[in-house]
Structure formats: structure tokens, C-alpha cells
Image (cartoon, rainbow, N blue to C red):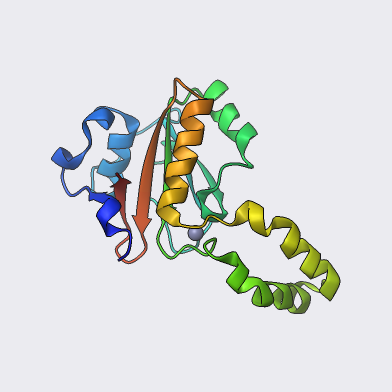
Length: 181
Ligand SMILES: [Zn+2]
């Protein structure tokens, strides 16, 4: 697993990084990784940004979290939703959860399949499908899952200085969450 050097496993409460102790980020790990019994929530405690990928599911209580799902956990085009969750929803914590084997890595290699799929399955004309791909590919390409999460976290910390933002990774093979170093 190519990302493993950069990941910190959480298999017990003592693995929670100091800066996230007694925060909703710790609770997220307790619910998802450590099997903590669900508590009832009246309002959201954090916002999770994660990939739209169908192989992932978070084990968390109802009402615990806002969740924005996008290709590659890319929140660059979800700015208003983020600000809404902070200003109206009152959350003070964000978890950006990337995952391994993400489809938004190396999109150029999927170009022909993407275009022919749009033509065959959705009925677009070939030139429309080509234009569509070319228009969006650079905006949605994430390059590398771990580095992309770190760059998003850096960007969001600058944009929202009072909000705590945690970089996390979900491993598809075991369904567990990790901190990214
Ligand atoms: Zn993905």
C-alpha cells in the first residue's frame, strides 16, 4: 500500500492525536473505528468532506455530521456549502477524508472511456463529450490522494482560521480511517 508511510492507524483511544482529543474528530474515530455506542445528537458536530465513491460508508450516528461528497473529496467547488455549515450549522471542525484507489487520480488515462461512455450511455454527441471532458479534467484531477487531502486541508485552514481541519484517509481494503501525517 503506497500511502502507508504517511498514515497513522487508530486502533485504540490512545492513538488519537493530542490536538484532536476531546473533539468531534476523536468521536468520529471512536464511532467508525472503535465501535463506540452511538449517542443521540440534536445538531451536527462537524463537517465531513469525502469522495462520492460507492465503496465507502461511515459508521456514525444520525445528526452527527454534515457530509459533502464530491469526486476525490475535492471541496474547491463546495465553498458555499462549507460556509453554510460553519455559519448557520455552527460546526467548528472539518474532516477531509480521502481514500486509496480514487477514481479522480490520473483522469487523463480514462479520457477515451469517459468520452465513449458519455456518448453511449448518455446520448451526447462525440464533440460535446470531448468538450465536456476537456473543460473539467484539470479542475477535478487530484493527482495523488494523500497529497491532495493535505493541500485541501492547508487551503481550508487559511480560509477559515478558527476552524480545526483534520486530514484523514479511508482505506478501501479494510474500511478504516487513518490520520494523515
Ligand atoms: Zn474517490
